[in-house]
Length: 111
Image 1 (cartoon, helix red, strand yellow):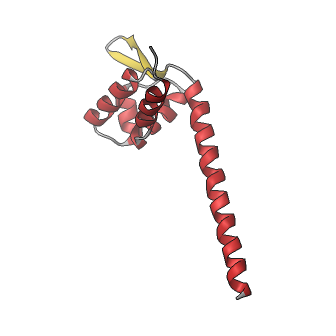
Image 2 (image 1 turned 30 degrees about the vertical axis):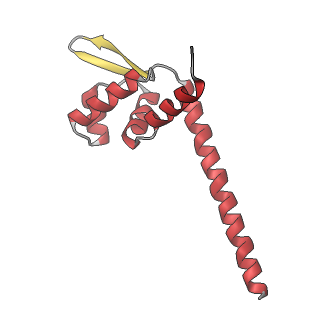
């Protein structure tokens, strides 16, 4: 049986790492080898391997063999829509916070 709440929490945990988010962003453009990801993100080989393993286990990333190389790619592009919606939500929350601060400033000037 599926536990949607637990699955959601697990996905959010996977997305909570900046390196994993950067890998997803890179792979949204085209396939990359782990060495290419390592160079573009300026991270160690072990860090990239660990993060790719986590993304593969989360079913977000997969790879194809190309000779001696593995070409990593996003398994589901829908994750990009989810990330875009999260970013929009964050922006809206920040806008509301700024508006609330402005209201407080207006209130303070009255007294």
